[in-house]
Amino acid sequence: MLKLFRDRNFSLFWFGEMISVVGDHISLLAFPWLVLQMTGSAALTGLVFAAQGIPRAFLLLAGGVLVDRTSPKAVMIASNALRMLLVMSLAYMISQDSVDIVMVFLMAFAFGVADAFFYPASISILPSIVSKDQLQAGNAIVQTTLHLGMTVGPVVAGLIIAGEVSNVSQQTADMAAQGLAAYERDREGLARAFFVDGLTFALSLLSLMFVKTRPLSSEEEVVEGTSVMDEAREALAWVWSVPAVRLGFIGMAVLHFFFMPMIYVGLPVLANQRFAEGAYVYGLEMAAYGGGAFIGAALSGIMAGPSDKNLIPVMYWVNMLSSSCLALVIFYEPYWWAMLIFGIAGLLDAFFWVHFTTWLQKRTPSRILGRVMSILMFMSLGLLPIGDAIMGFAIEWNISVTMVGCSVILMLCCAWIALNPLSRVIVPLKSADTA
Image 1 (cartoon, rainbow, N blue to C red):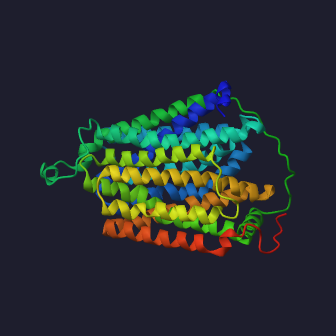
Image 2: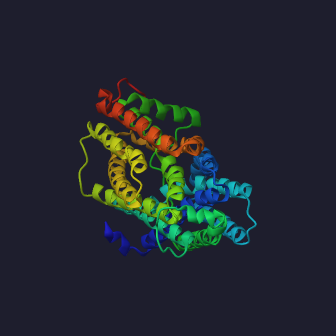
Image 3: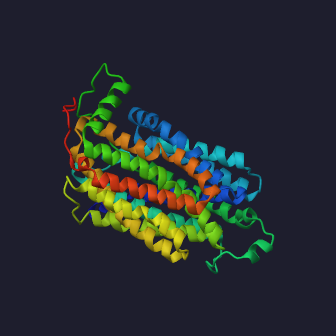
């Protein structure tokens, strides 16, 4: 796998991808923390994710079309240039104390639009850089790079925002008595974070400009006379016809609706309430999850997963354990405890995610593979903005009840899928026109 780094072209691509992933996770922490410190509202913190996620979810298909009509490299360069300009402008406005909450939401929306084109391009570019027999190794490196960025990015963002961190002590009443506004305390650090984020996009853009790609010839004839809707229905019919795939997709939608908003909205609110250096603690918790995911992704390359028939049940038993973390972090407050349990959750989640996607790629008819994977992406990303918005209001109402309630709902859903006999049925129950 590491032999690919001898290829200068791939190494340039990997460097740009790594820097870009770190930048993504700096902004992933900085955007909600900015809104939280400006407004003190968990609801608005959730809505900023919705503002970024809604255009991303609805424009993913358009992004894929543009990639097919131009080239992944060109779309990635343009997307990174736009994201660089956005975060650099936001950094300047924060440093001058001239930004308001409306502008932050507009920036988040524009960032989501750029993401919608960057994501399909970043997924599509690798076959034009490496040969077919190196594709699996290249994908493995990209996946581990993603989780490494999840580890480094939040820590970098937390340190930059917090500045000099002398402790991560529990929040005390003395701080409130000082009369310092939360936003003013972190304003310079937030400006630094977005500026560094902009630099990562600039470096990624620069490295991509030197990456050489080759045009890919289509191996299959394009079927004329079919609409986009007809092709989508064909893929949906296949997903629904295979019970294990159907239950796996339903479970992914529920997990992203209830679990991810707690990670990206609930945890920063909880850290802000409990700790003096909340941004730093939240960064540590996110880094622990990313570090665990990095280890899990690496282990998935050397350890076999469950058998094909048992993959979905076993994966959802494990997801039930991960879901319990949301309640466990409420009942015991030390930050090291949150780091420990989310680190374990990240390891298990990444391990089974790699095996699940590989299992799905092998079982899906090749001619509908792209559409099936796009359905999976939509199930993961499409409901997330709605979940962020709804859970933001619920967290503002009562964070403890919301996180424990989501934990219980997720555990019950995962148990239902794991115990369902249909989760072991991996062939279509009825003949679908997908062969």
